[in-house]
Image (cartoon, rainbow, N blue to C red; front, side):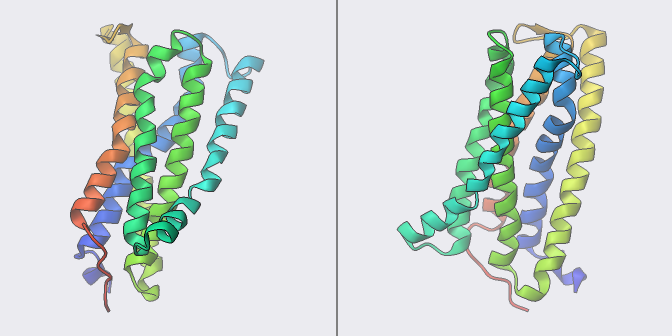
Length: 220
């Protein structure tokens, strides 16, 4: 029953790991065209802006290899699927740290932030696919659908919150002429949100590892 499922640490580990990370993907998905316009003066209809978005999404397709890493770890270490998946997810959680450098490198060329956002997107999709699979690692078949639904709920909430707060941040940064790390106004706001997105995946991994430190299958 759902009332029992929501009392389990495995459920909360998956829910909270999704809650703190999925919004980063939705932020980049929704705000990148505005970021290109605000920081580089390129409208979405500009051929250069379209080329930037094409390259970004082409890079995210690297995520097709994300599901293979846990299998490689299992074959080499003979760990159980959950522990091997956690190791793979830690690797995917480290890649988004590059987002901290996106704004500074944007001072050199607009291609650097786009490449970094693409890599973060690929890491997110790899992370997310494995997080969905954690449900089948820990829960019996009859409960996997419920956990997947809870996972999706967390992702929806996360996306709404990230995007709403990001919009407020950009408005405040612009109106207050916020200055941070050499950026002023909206660029300063983008820098802050990029940093939040950068560390979100490590936070999600730590939450999952804390609540479910080792493989413990749920028995019903």
